[in-house]
Image 1 (tube, rainbow, N blue to C red):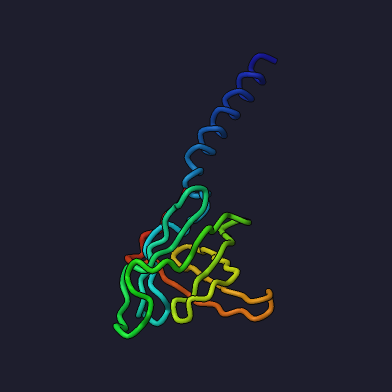
Image 2: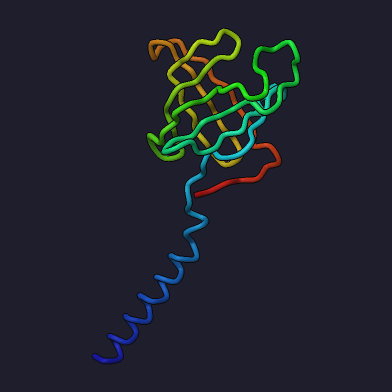
Length: 135
């Protein structure tokens, strides 16, 4: 009986150690970082702002675009599910604010802006430099 208890205790300790080692691998992706738009013309930095995430333009290749560095394009993005955040998305082209969603999968970010939850437009982004962030 003592030997069985000792083996059970050793097994629990070993499994606990494995769980600690596996934690970084299981950590959720975060939107924090610099993201390049699919057409390559825009870089946005997403970072925590209070209890949510916000995104600001840091580089715009098209000098005629209204999306100048410092322009806010994502605001109040709060986690709504695994690797998913909801808040507001601002179209720098027309200045209008839309219900926004962003979803992270590794080094890919998908943002969507919707009007009346029916008319939506999505954009795919790639993490600049390929550096994957996790919580």
